[in-house]
Length: 238
Picture (tube, rainbow, N blue to C red):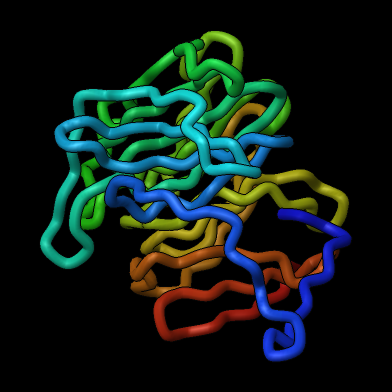
C-alpha cells in the first residue's frame, strides 16, 4: 500500500506514458516494491521463479529458481502470491507451498520452507495464493484454511492456527478496538488470531465463501468489511 499518492484519473487530458515493456513468465503474482527495485513471481519452464527488476528500466537484477511447477486448466501455470518486501528481504509463497526468504539485493536464500508439508494442508484447486505477512519477528502465510508463522531470522515454525475450510485469501494485520490481530478469511468465515502465538481471538461464521475471498478493515474500531465471491459482508464486533 502506498499512502499519500494521487493518480491523475483524466487519461484523455493526461494519458499514461509507457516507460518500458518486458515479457515475463506466466503467473498471477503482482509486484512488491522497494526503492528502485520491483519483485514478482513467475513460471519459467519447470521452475517457479522469484524475479527482481529495476523499476526505471525493467532490467533483470536477479532470479531465484525452485524446481516446481503448478498448473490447472482454468488459470494456467505459475505462482499466485505477491512477494512481500520488509527490512531488506523478500518473502514469497509459491503455488506448490514453497516459502522463501531471500536477500532483496542479491536473491540469496536466507531460508526456505514448504507450507504444505509443514501444515499438512491439502493443496487447493487453484494453488496456494497467499501473500506473506510480516509482523514483528514472524512471517505468516496461509496454507488454504491454515496459518503458519515462521521466525523471520531462521524460518523455524513458531505457531500454527486452523481457520477452517479452504481459502485463497491472505492474512491481514488489523488493529481493532486497540488490539493488534491477524485476520484471515476462509471457507468457514473470518478468524482472528494473535500475531505472537496464533491464539484465537474471535471468529465469524459466514457460510461457504471459498471463492478467493479477501478481508478488509472498514474503520479503525470495531467494524470489518469482507468481499467474498459475489457477496459483500459488513459486521460489527461487540
